[in-house]
Image: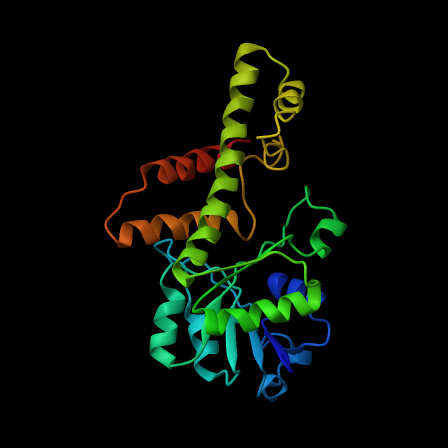
Amino acid sequence: MNKIAIIGHGHVGRSMRAIFPDAAIYDKFQPEYADREAVAGAGLALVCVPTPPSDDGSADISAVREVCGWLDAEIICIKSTVPPGTTDALRAETGKRIVFSPEYIGEGPTWSAEQQAAPWPYVIVGGPEYDALPVVAAFRAALGVDMPCHVTDARTAELVKLAENCYLAQQVTFANEFYEIAHAVGANWEQARELWALDPRVSASHTIVYEDNRGFDGKCLPKDLAAAIACAEAVGYIPTFLRAMQDANARFRCQP
């Protein structure tokens, strides 16, 4: 694919630029990248704008909608985390070739600089094959022809991203609960965690408990947990387990 553009040069946008270093950049909040003409006529545009929580916890996709409205790229690939159904709705609203691809760049003290700079070991693209396959080809051209790539429908890809972040949040919440139990029964939590993490089914990175920064925070986990809850409730399902996780994390975050 000829010209590649990145819209939004924040955390996700910078990770995309590490993969596509020659991409044109647009970010209205950064003066050096505030020229919209720089991304005009792109073959592939990667949308990496924020989707912060609204007052009710649902994801605010107004920035994604705005960008998809004016972009004239041949194919638009949303990298911002959005609720299931967003990509299909934007395709219908705009008549444009829009797909979704979750991004996995990490944040926080457990991620080394090398981990943050390295591409994720697979790529997922959600959308019709005739739109998704050119995106797959672009990533394979940048990352190598052996890069595992998976094509699915957009709603499934969007759900996968929410599920993964909520699962990571669940691990943090679970570990914080057992941190309390360990102290209550007089066990050595640090040794218990290290021994527990020997089990290959356990993720060591999200079971660390920071005494001065309990629970989970950051740009992704609280936002996407709230978005998943709001998304489920909007279609009539009450996600009691996710609500309990959210309440437990609020309790941990309030501890001195």
